[in-house]
Each structure stands twice: as structure tokens, then as C-alpha cells.
Image 1: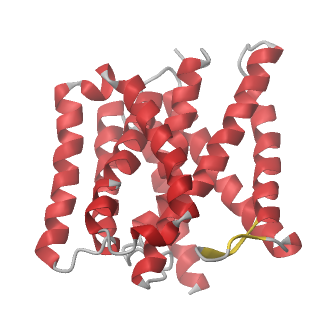
Image 2: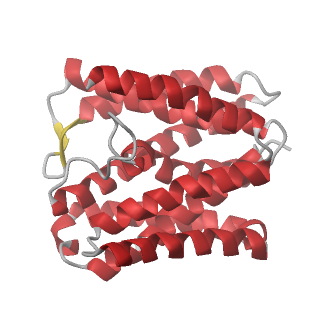
Length: 271
């Protein structure tokens, strides 16, 4: 299993970096939409939709939604309210997770939840990619979440005592959360020194990073809750050794809306 995970990572990592840095924004938007449509296919399994045609239809609806958002232009014209809606959704998801059993069996609600979970994340990544040096900013956001995940894992294994959400994800601890926030604070401080920002702007950027990381943990827990309710370990088997698409992007669904929305609101968005 470890060998397979490493082989898959060695293939996918350069491909992701190349796609983020080399693709023009329209092609990047299409690529991210394709990944999220695969995520929607897996989401349909977690609702759970019982038969294959319904799952295909759910994924097709997601594809139509992304196409309509791009073709109509409201991915740009309605960018700010959609990013706000995405951020609000993940804050609302905290209440969902606090009383997670209420959603058991509520297929319609879990299906509708895919819209504020998937669409604002896509809009945020596309908006960030379309700015000056946008590819590097998207890559930074990916690195931020990867650092958070890794730091949470290792600090949790070394120092973990207090469970974060034992009914949802027993392996996660508050010490892991602290490790993730600390590691990402160091990363954000280092990156904040690169642009020509004031000390106040640097501080706001670091705080924004910490909020994004905190919400990324909510995204991870939310997908874990959906999986636990249907009794599966992985959202799918599309990525050998890593499970499904949602297993890899759960944190990346929640972080981009607040990160990009915060950059816009604070006047830190690259030109």
C-alpha cells in the first residue's frame, strides 16, 4: 500500500504543479471542474444515491453547473457573494458536525450541500489563478493545506492526547490542530515578507491563513462524517493508494473561498 501511495504521489504531484503553473486560466478552470465532477460522483455515493444512473445524473448536474457558471460569466460577476456564501456554508457546517446524527438518512439535504461545497471552491481557485502570478498563488494555497495536513498528522501522532471529533474522525486531535496552525503560521509569515506589504497587511495575511487552515479542517471532518454515515473508509477508489478524489481534496473544498474572499476584502489580492 505504501509503495502504491508513493508511486501515485510521484506521478500526480508533478502533474498538479505543471497544471497550476503552465495552464492558462480557462484550461485550469476546466481541469479543476473535471476533478470536482469526479468529486461529485463520489459525493453521490456518500449521500447515498442507491443506483448507478442516479449517481451519473448527480455528476452530470455538477458538470452542467460548472459549465453554466463559466459560460454565463457569473463565476466572475457574482464572485464576491459566491465566495461569501461558500465561507458561510463551511461555518454552518460546524453546526452540522456538532449534531452530526441529525443528517443521517437526509439524502436531499446532503445532496444539496454539494453545491455550496464544490462551486465556491472552484470559483475561488479560478479567480485566484486569473490574477497576476496567479499560478504561484494557487500553488501556495495548495502547499498551505498540504503543510497543515502533514503537520496535523505528525504533531497528532507525537503529542496527541485530546480527541477533536471522536465520533467523526477518532484519529484527529486538538494537538494536531495546534501543530497545523503553528506550522502554517510560520509558512505564512515567511511568504508575507515577499510582497511589498505593510506590517499590518502582513499580520492580516497571516491571520487569514490561519482562518483558512481552520476551515480546511472543517472540510476534512465534513467529508469524514459523510463517509462514516455510510460505513466506508474512502470516498472512492479513483486514486490508487489514496482512495477517492474527495479524500484528497476535502480540505481544499473549504479553504479557498475564505482565503480568496479574504484577499479581496483585505485588499491583498494580487493584480
